[in-house]
Length: 425
Image 1 (cartoon, one colour):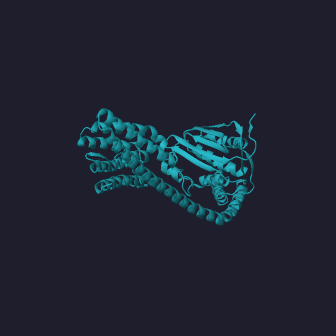
Image 2: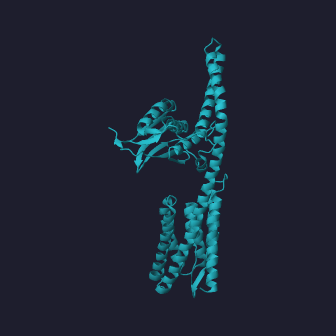
Image 3: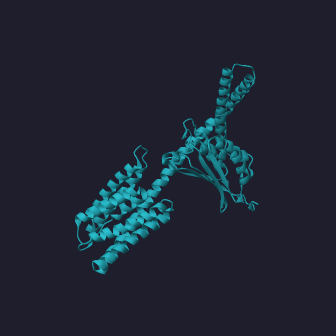
């Protein structure tokens, strides 16, 4: 490799390595600007870098050259948005038309085919494991290289040996570049998730210590005060006084519920674990919560086909699921429905709760379960903390997906007991 070729390669790699970090850092900013604005700005930044790649191509032999313009296009499309990818694609085609030459129509054909392929696979990209992401981007690079070969050999009647040499080097360099960039981005994302989880754990530890220290001391005078209020309300008093006393009782009950949540969060571990027949327990919970749902014009639908058994405490399991259902009901002020489904996946029980409520933004979804964060005006966030704590204590996981205005889905995974599962008669 001569000095000029090495220099051109380094320059191109510099241009394509910069945008992923810019995209990632910019996309993680917590500000009020819309995703569309972020996509447009990222698209402009990516377009500039694509043009720089094309301005400093890598020359192989004579006037035969290539550049890494497709890397920012692929990364912008996968890691930012379709809008970003389309902006970069349009800029790429406009810039290539400025340079002209017989290769313009080839560039238009190849990159048009590539962006169509990107549209088809983008929805699945984020859910893929990292090694499959590597494989997918390598296949896309191979697809692009094959199209270049076909166009230049069949349409332009170019020297096949030279074209194959250039495209093979393009495929190798671009595949390695994408591998390095995707690995770096995924590592940064993992580090960000670990940091966020550590931050959540620290906040949860503070709340837990606070709960353990003061909850019992506060609960005792609350219980005594509530008892005296109950005695006083039995006395013949003016209606307005009784109304005030009843309001005071309601507030005391609310305060006691908050304390109970603190106590549950401070001690989420199972004291007396036993076998829970989930279908039986869910029927009890739904029966208990149905009157509240009817008051809010919310329909509850429970479906299952097997008796699944997990290990836990009935009281804590009821508290956990009741919190989720109450939140779902309160997220539908104009009524709606909640679908509750149970299923078995290998050695796990899947409990899926879907509502048609107001939904959550990505930022709200990310903060779900944090101390003192709630989407409700008077919420404390303790209810969801308790839900997450109980599920963890049962050896399970909870995952939420949501879209603003369309509703929320909670998926709970719990390990099954090693018992024979019986079909419900």
